[in-house]
Length: 327
Image (cartoon, rainbow, N blue to C red; front, side, top):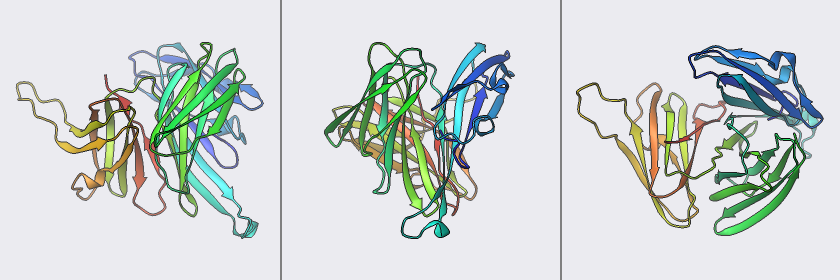
């Protein structure tokens, strides 16, 4: 993320265990690694959350990357990135500058790996896509970024020094992005795409990165109603057509009760390397007030799933709700 200008990155540490966890956080910037005292020996109580604000300790940095070392217990990492960028157009000049706003949610990966797979979500003509790679280790990395969009294959190469990050543009469109690192050097990877929605508002979304392409995904908190609508983007990551079903997850039945089949919300047929976006409001009759429910997305073959929470109320900011592989 970035702390330049008024932009910010907030890091959330969650402890899912019954005993306290302790973690050290290191922030990597273009000028080197920073380990603020407040980020060392952070204690996270059982089943609780600790939120840390990066801009307080590393302000005005165009790009920041984070490494979390769990010293005791286990922690789950998430990041909320807020973009607040002042835009000056050549035609209108500084007197008519405006501020672009956007937010995205990212989930930290457990360890750096040599292969990542992400969906290239389709965006409009005003959108752009960026591949972000981070080398958290002690050896330089040579990475290959391969994208397949509409049957066309494109390959880019990046070299990263230890403790540094690199970015490369990737054309958005229905397809799949694969990152491979040579000589066993692990990387963290993210594909981020943004699209201008209106003057002063921009959607910034980070696509989920996985090591394999499973056939079943779970969205634990899908939401629609009260000014919000969630759009699911499903990508066929294989060379064969797949059939996809989207089911609503039901609470476990009471003891002795019969098993109730989950309501099937919709089915999709996806050709090889294609994507489909499905707004939940088109699937459900929404009453007044927000409706929250779980979703299970199942494919007859390997698929990638991302879910964007879109505001229907004017002036709100989109954010990403993360889907997770099931099993």
